[in-house]
Amino acid sequence: MDTGLLLNVFVFLAAACLVVPLAARFKLGAVLGYLIAGILIGPSGFGFIDRVTSTMHFAEFGVVMMMFLIGLELEPALLWRLRRTIVGMGGLQVVLCSLALMGAIMALSKFGFNLSWETALAIGMALSMSSTALVLQMLEEKHLMQTQVGETTFSVLLFQDIAVIPILIIIPLLAAGSGQVPEAHGASLVENLPVWAQALAGLSTIAMVIAGGQLLSRHFLPRIARTNLREVFTATSLGLVVGVTLLMQLVGVSPALGAFLGGVVLANSPYKTTIETDIQPFKGLLLGLFFISVGMGMDVDRLLTQPVQLMLAVFGLMAIKGLILYALARRFGMDNIAGSGLALSLAQGGEFAFVLFQLSGQLGLLTPDLRRFLTLVVAISIGITPICLELFNRYVVPRFLSLLPERAPDPIEERNSVIIAGFGRFGQIIGRFLRSQGVMVTILENNPDQIQLLQRFGINRAYFGDATRLDVLRSAGADQARMLIVAIDDAEGAVKIVQLAKENFPHLKVFARARNRRHAYELDRAGVDYYHRETLDSSMAVAREALITMGAPKAQVERRAQAFLQHDIVTLRKSFAFFDSEPDLVNFTRLSQKELERILTDDETDSAEATKRA
Image 1 (tube, rainbow, N blue to C red):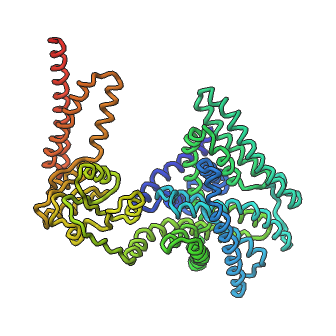
Image 2: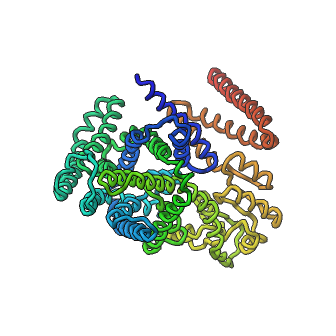
């Protein structure tokens, strides 16, 4: 076995394991951690690995796998629902950014940069692409894929991937028009055909992928599944992605687009979950390898010798794209904060720019020095995007939200004996039962959307107001009410409400929802009259039914469950004396567990003796 290959694999894995957790610890994101790891082990760092180009070609397969999995999660109905943002916003973004960047590059000709309009347009189209791998990875880390920003971002990225096909056709035409002599290369089987023939070959291949996916889903995958061999199904899943990638490369079409279409075709397959589970680990590793290889390709020496030019180029790229994206976001109905987040997320260059720069260089549109400069610009823009987004989310968003005018609490005229703070699922059950028993309640809810939802269901007596404010509690009649039930989701807010109520309305009985044992301790210290852990009853109900279903006597299960609950409630309150000292708390918990085992064992002995006497 090749020792050099094993050494390179070890270096990649070791760098990722050491650097990425540190980046995550400082909330810089995994992507930036991979980039830093690549810089450290690459030619500009310690020089452990110097074969950057070959590593990049292999690592690009991670992007292909990611697009396949994204397609697997989508259904044609969802694509149709997003058609407006995919075609409208995505199309305008690519066209406007390409033309704006081309104009900016042409304007530089006045300062001695003698580039033809063909070269400027090729560069503009390449830089109009954003990093699909980076942005989708960040959206998944932040759990934003299902939000408006996530769906819009995905729509724009999807159109960019589709736009790679016509760009790959346009760049050779630009090279031919500029009279450049291309380098010898063999990118695809159709590169020597006329343009119309290349386009026809690409469309035919896409149709073949769609038809082949249907056949695989109906006839081939069921036979593989019937073998009951997981490794065979995993090999089949990987073979699908590799085969689609190879086929697309042979006809000069974007492999990522082909993999995406293959995933969409299989989205309705009953084997979708199995395929996704098999490919997911490979996708994560190869995406990490891709970002490490991008970091390895960053020419740090040039960054030291030409810092001003590089920073100006990066700033210009992100400023032009950001302004256009923000304007489009506002045009398509997004608010200021969402539009700013979208613009910042997509303002960087993308991984497809590396491919397009390489093609442009082979066709003679870019000199080797200019290609290296542009590659570094894109790599730097990818590297600083996670930092910019983290700063944006940490400092800009809270400040922006604090400047928004707050909605005034609703005036409350009614006076009831019970006030419920928070009317989510927990509070709704309490309110419904109390009302069914003739007890009128005053509902305080701090979420305007929840208020509207309740009103649609005919619950009109819900008032907007923050129960952590003393004036809101007074307005709700806390000085006359008999009981306050705290059912909000925010644990810290719940403790604050209890403290506020006990300090200002000592006659008021305060019941609260406890999220966990620590929260129960905080509520007890704040002076709550009664607390109940929200998952305690439901967990015990499932446990009781599980034992009964497995054959345990129902009476015995109910008796032991009651003993367990009573012991848990008592020991929790006793444990409050040790919550500020972890060693003492650990010892108390161990003793309590042994006591519980003894109680249940005694119950089993007593039950056996009673059965024997009977």
